[in-house]
Amino acid sequence: MKLYEYESKIIFKKEGIPIPESYLASTPDEVEKIVENLKKEVAIKAQILATGRGKAGGISFAKNPKEAKQLARKIFSLKIKGFEVRKVLVEERLFPSAELFLGITYDLSQKTPVVISSSLGGIDINEIAKKYPEKVFTLPVNMVWGIQNYQGKLLAKNMGLKSKDMFKAAGIAVKLFNIFKKYDCDLAEINPLILTQDGKLIAADAHLELEQEALYRHKELEQLEIPIRKDSPRIPTKFEIEAEKIDKIDHRGVAGRVVEFDGNLGLLIGGGGASLTIFDAIRYHGGKPANYCEIGGNPTVKKVKELTKLILKKPGIKGLAVITNVLNNTRVDLVARGVILAMNELDIKPSEYPILFRSAGAYEEDGYRILKKYKIKYMDRSYSIDQAAKAAVEMISNLK
Amino acid sequence: MVKIMGMFVKVEINNSKCKKVKNCKICEEVCPVEIFKFENLEENNEIISVIEENEDECIFCNLCLEKCLQKAITIKKLY
Image (cartoon, rainbow over all chains, first blue to last red; front, side, top):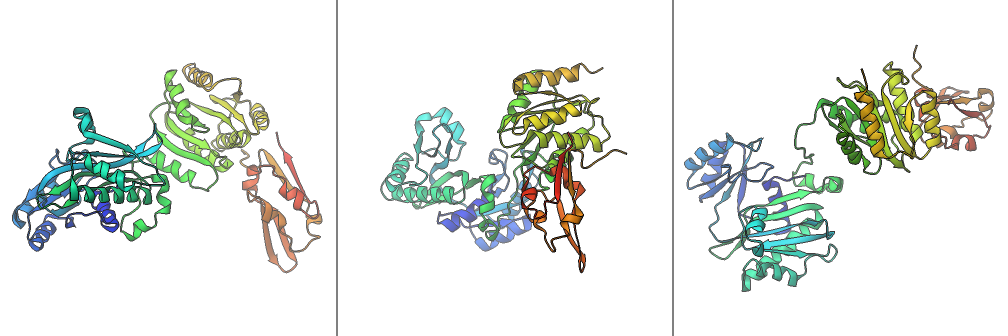
């Protein structure tokens, strides 16, 4: 879950990373009042869940309340990367003598957190890495031990800091790692970390991304007034919302995580991460999937039935492919039961409908016996996922 | 009419055997997929029945068969 800058700064403040004096505003009038009370030059920053707002005009500096109101009005009218600006953060303006970068993320190839520091802050770190690779310092860190003081100093040294500033930056690096670990972050970034002209180190921006699957153990977010939400690159379709409801019927197994597509082949796929492989195989053979989904962990017959019904009712569906990996934790017979029950409820004769089954593993003998009884074409484990995908695509293209 | 439940599994209770033990709801307690329903309608009129909607959820764990004091339950595969 991506946090807004102001939410990240709530956490920074709580954990002791210095931030500028800042206030949240929802209207230009509020901005004006805040600046009146602050009696300082301010930065007005659009609060959106996308990077690159600076280039898009989402950050402005104002000297007085009147100017701030005018600039805020402009920012509120912007649409940046598809996001409407609903809130702005009004902060005291910082006058930097240096803009630095400090970030923590996971290096998946090294399977460890890495801390990145640079003396060039304020621009996208990917750009810095491309143009000035020598300016980017990367340090793998042990998850349990965290950043040791010497490592903090090493990071600070590579930001070009010396003496007292180096100690301050090392402290901030240690605190940022504590946040990264405590809140189960995927990314914790300060860009820019500003060294002010009067020698203070302040996090001018804050960017935290929390691991979606770990959110359930962060009840403290509510107390910090950070609502838990689901990141989505787009608004889920009706079909996807219905599928999510089905998956939530009960806790047993997964029969959901559906993504809608506009093809004609319904997919009921899964098995230890095989969904993507199966989906790709269908596309490779020229198939047009109507959906992506995941089944696994032994969902109940009811969940499979409801998901199958949802897929079969989708307009434009010409056939159904039930393809899974060899499953040791999902029973073939229960999946077969769910599919047949769904067809029965929709008054579809399984023997006459274009359906292909390739599932193997737990209770496969029972599963095949059911499929045989209802005259459904199936493939056993002697056929690969690729062969099954090809057969499913051919099944649809052979339809008159 | 299309049959929409109990297509794959048939669970039956022999009521005369079942009623010999009063206030026993052991099958309801052990069933992981909630096939049995215990109802105490009035005094001395207890009923254990099969929730037909859930019959096809049966996973053949056989816990009900093992625990039933009267061996009053039978489970049939319909395929």
